[in-house]
Image 1 (cartoon, helix red, strand yellow):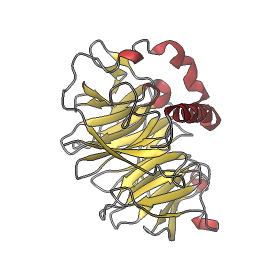
Image 2 (tube, helix red, strand yellow; image 1 turned 60 degrees about the horizontal axis):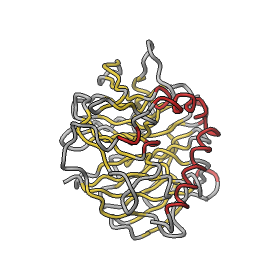
Image 3 (cartoon, helix red, strand yellow; image 1 turned 135 degrees about the vertical axis):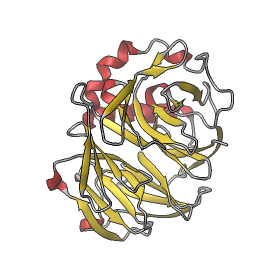
Image 4 (cartoon, one colour; image 1 turned 90 degrees about the vertical axis):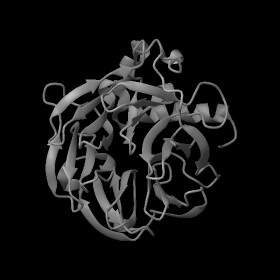
Amino acid sequence: MRAARVAASIASLCLVTGLIVYGGVFLWPGLAGSNPLLTELGITGDEDKQVPEYLYSIGSEKDGPVRPNAVAVDGKDRVYITDAGTAKVFVYSAKGRKISEWGQGRGQADFSFPNGLVVAGDGSLIIADSVQKNIRVFSPEGRYIKTIMDNTAGIKPGSLTRGIDGVIYVSDLMNNRVLAVDENGRNLKEVSDTREPLSYPQGTAVDKEGRIWVADSGNFSVAIFDHQGTIIKKITGGGEPETPFSMVRGIAVDKVGKVYISDTISHHIRVFDSTGRQVSIFPGTGEGEGMLVFPAGIFVHDDGSLYVVDRGTGDIKVFSLN
């Protein structure tokens, strides 16, 4: 972790300001008075005592990421981080040793705002650029392979999630929807709610039943859709008494079906079961290693590790779920 909590707090303030620039200004009116229980998030009454344990951080060195957006791990345990601050992709070993960085090339190998990423079935990387408004495929070493969606598609891609069936779910920040596409960019279906439209959707995740969970950031909620893209329910918070979300950004599902949601402004990860009931929350409150400043993207590894992007400290914090 970098030097001091004070510096991290300043960084967090700068990041919040950055949300205004990237379309998040509408979020703030609801934040002022929407969540009086934020300081009590660590005591909700129905929590599981076995909470994830902080292990270590990745990318906290001086020449590491500055404003990380997303993280993913491939089959060889290489950790990939998209970073908006440097317009690069950083590559680390599973234990945090820096392997390489790439992305400031020319033409198709250049990034402006690398955002969501997933590892494709063949081990290549699919990466969304929210400013260039495209989705491209790269080798693990950073070699450009192809573009599967370009700026003529009329979308602003944010987060990416790959389902167990190989379908890629793309959060469209401009049109307030989620698109399901194959690994060649062919549109398969649209995930949206015509009655209560999504507002600036961020993270997405697919559970064991094929349901699609969407961080509906502008509506301070999480929307759950069936595999066909039809809305099932919305979650606005959890705990007893129920505490509303502050700002939802990242979502991931583990192998037993628990759903992890980054509640950014409250500095926590909230854990829900498959029915949408909150079962725990972490980390605790206070100072020290493992505390989160501005949690965003989340990734669950098959080995039982949870990778959390902390934009407030510019690194990835790794927790054990076992």
